[in-house]
Amino acid sequence: MRCEVKQVRRSHFGTHRPPSAATPRGRAVGWLVVACLAVRLASGPLPAVAQQAAPPEPAAASDSAPRDGLPWMEDFAKWHADQATELVDLYRWLHEHPELSLQEGATAERLGSAWTKQGLKVAQGVGGHGVVGVLENGPGPTVMVRADLDALPVTERTQLPYASQVTTTLADGTPSGVMHACGHDLHMTCVTGTATYLAKHREQWSGTLVVIGQPAEERGQGATAMLKDGLLQRFPRADYALALHVDPMLVTGKIGVRPGPMFANVDSVDITVRGRGGHGAAPHTTIDPVVQAAELVLSLQSIVSREVKPTQPAVVTVGSIHGGTKHNIIGDTCHLQLTVRSHSPAVRQQLVDAIRRRAEGVAAAWNAPKPTITMDEGTPSLHNDVKLATRLRGVWDRQLAGRVVDAELAMAGEDFSEYGLAGVPILMIRLGVTSEARLRHFEMLGQSPPSLHSAEFYPDLDRSLETGVAALVSGCLDLMPRAAQ
Ligand SMILES: [Zn+2]
Ligand SMILES: [Zn+2]
Image 1: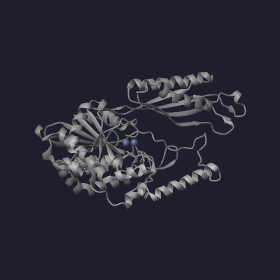
Image 2 (image 1 turned 120 degrees about the vertical axis):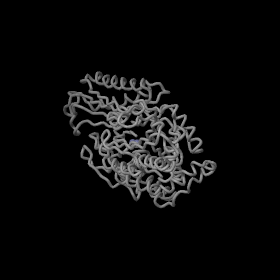
Image 3 (image 1 turned 90 degrees about the vertical axis):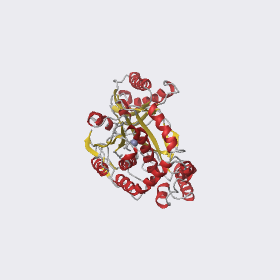
Image 4 (image 1 turned 90 degrees about the horizontal axis):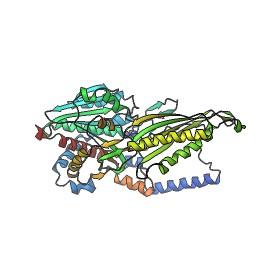
């Protein structure tokens, strides 16, 4: 999921330093930290440690009742319990070996060999490091189930025994850890669990299963690359496509379903504000790009609040601003990086037009050269196919009774949308990955659980995995019924 996590960089505007303990504010913050630690210690171990120390969670205590009378789910749960060790091993391996976007070679190999072992025909190198597995099982529809392969430049701080130790050097020379901080390791494990179940229960369905491991989701490039490389032509063409994405705000054991709009249009905008540099002691001889940029940042904030219809979701965030070199020099330029989010095409265009108008307007007011504005059309918004979502919601309401909730509209982006734009009815669901106990713990602290892309994010594995595989398998069984034979 593209949430545009920014790597921390030293800004020419100065780095933010925590207040010194010698100042009154510093002392107050110090006491606050001590008080928070005391509350944390009183309320139990830190969440990440809690997973190692705590005994395994009770199996589905809260929803044992709805499971009664659901023979498929009971059978599935028994099967899953037998498979769990192998799937957990795969998950841990993937978590310990994260690879950044466009570098997912070892991940694709590992996934491909797991699928080959289950009897799927596997092709590597589709649209870069993309991997495709096909399981033909008689006449009937073709269902594609998608996982994403890539990890993020985040240094893990979970304290899990299998925490990533992988490091890298970013393009700007900054050292960084690499981490599956968006849960793609769990997506891959759920999809592999689904392929394993369907390979072992061929008598329960008829049709063709296509599983894919898609590279470069975090860059919004992988789906397009696989489609351009003939995903829908070289392999059986999907009649439906399913995927899931972990959701740390949703309790383990639950899935979130939403027909129609689900994730946002994501656009990246770069603005170079131009001025005329000179001595910091003679500002009247210059056109200061830093002050222009400061005005522009504030002006941009009123696009959503004053121009966009209040009922339309929209975001304009200035995530990065760099200008100047030294205290006493007024530079020539200042560079701003924005992420722009919307759901409707009309609002998307409205935001882009307003950004351009305001950037040029500020420059005109300063008698400055026109700014350079470049837009990178990123990920298109994700619309779940309404008919498919409604059909499978009915299936999950029966098969996973009590575990299905309405998913919220989100401003994150997901390039799973590209398969929908290519003409395949798509459905992405949210998968709860934070245990009830952990959610309560954070609630008590007055905090949210670590979000996706956080260095402290991790899923509570067993129950998340069982629910994810159950949802994908039951969806596939409904879409490829045995009656089609
Ligand atoms: Zn993601
Ligand atoms: Zn992500």
